[in-house]
Amino acid sequence: MTTNFHRAYPPQTVPSYPALWLLFHGNKLILQTEDSRDITEAEKQANKETLSIPLGDATLLTEIEHEEILYLGLLGDIPCVTTNLKDETRLPANWRAVGLRELYHHLPEIEFELAGYAHQITNWQHSNRYCPVCTTPLLSIAGHWGHTCPNNHYTGYPPVIPAMIVLVHDNDRVLLAHKPGWGKRYGLFAGFVEPSESMEECVRRELREEAGIEVTDIHYFTSQAWPFPDQLMIGFTARYAGGEPEPQDGELDDIAWFNLAKLPDELPPPFSLAYILINDWLTKQTAQAALKEKG
Ligand SMILES: [Zn+2]
Image (cartoon, rainbow, N blue to C red; front, side):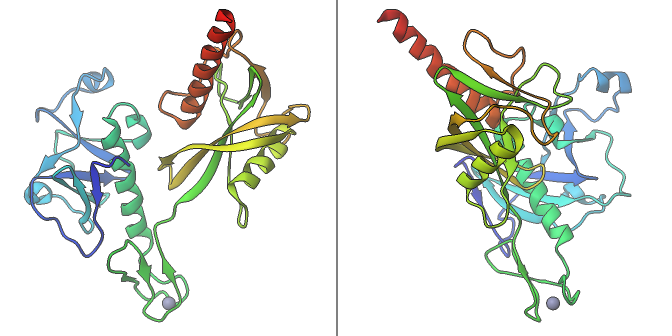
């Protein structure tokens, strides 16, 4: 996440108000409209509202049933707090509960990232309260979000699940994948890391399993937190080294080579790691093509 956000851990408490309230109701993020009038369903559908994360003092939840309030840290000098609202609580007229995925690209990037982090922490606190061996309530570990069993059976921390995504290139062409339901969009190969596997082994295995190909020159590119849920997408590039690319395990329904002159009608959404990798490759190819023309 951005360097402008400074994380805090229990037992730190909110230093001051107003704070940014990252509230969840049935897994959806609460956003506030600018005015408190109850708008019509038609206006909601037409997206005529300006929605933002509530900023307010400690009285914001006075009338609302909620779980424990958790202090996440400072965004600049604004404290950020989070909690789950109880399912049965009634929301104020100017609050909207919106699915996190729908907000991708609609909230400022830092607020979207913060909402993802808050969602992971509230889920963790909610679902990790009792020892999985003896069911005794767990204790907090000071300075972390971790929990531990007083009878020494179990210690756990919020999970981060690594997954790799890879762009396969071969001189001036790039290998893209298509899944059922993607329409005209082509994207990259991706998969979860298995226990006892390195990232590079994961890249090789997934490409064998999904595409029936071998690769070499595997290089780390960049990574992106992806809270749907708890994932860390780790991006790579790899050079094609052999095999006839063909869908292998039913996950993909097409695999095809593309180049600057022939690109798919649709690419993954901007700001996704898949798009960033493809865009970087396209930029380099365009520069090389320009050089060739000059030379
Ligand atoms: Zn225990």
